[in-house]
Structure formats: structure tokens, C-alpha cells
Amino acid sequence: MSATWWAVIATCVGCYLLKLAGLAVPRRVLDRPGLRRFAELAPVALLSALIAVQMFASGQELHFDGARTLGLAAAVVALLLRAPFLLVLAITAAVTALARLAGL
Image (cartoon, rainbow, N blue to C red; front, side):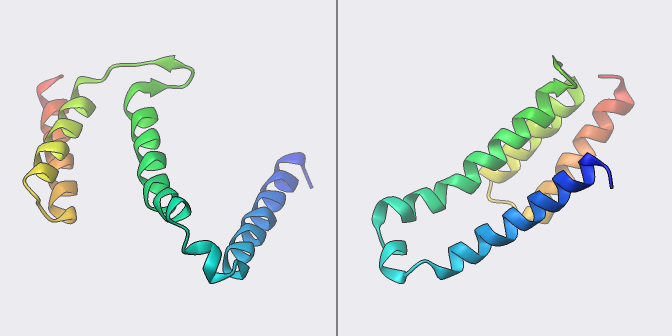
């Protein structure tokens, strides 16, 4: 087996053990306000970072793509208007596709 597969297996085992540890934490620890606030904000921060990397990075370089940026702007507007999530995805895809079709 190659080193890559060993890394994948080790990561899987680590994720499983982390999930198991989270289930074993006593309730009194989870009720702390600081930990609760972190648990609410961490997924938002991670998703925002993932979106930023996908939007403005191409390999090791910073890259600006007009179509992606227009799609993200359309998603932001749809979210501000409180559109359902699936509609936000459809609007984002449509705006990005039209921008690419227009050559942006």
C-alpha cells in the first residue's frame, strides 16, 4: 500500500475517534456558553473559508473569475432576500452559466 493510502486510513481513523470523543463528552461540558458559541460559529467560518478558496484560488495562485464572482453576488442577494436554499443554488448556477456564456 502506498503512503497516500496510509494517510487516508489514518485520517479516517482520526475522524472516527474525534467523533467518538465528541459523543463521550459529558453534557455539562457541552452546556458551557463559550463552547456552544464556538460550535455555532465554527461551521460558518469553515464554510466561508472554503468558499473563498474556491472563488479566488487556482492551484497556488490568486485568480479572479468574473463569472464565479457574479454567481457569488447573486447568491448573496438571494440569501439577503431569504430565498430557499435550493433556489439560491439554482440562481447561482444560472447566473454563473449566463456569465460564462457571455464571456465574462
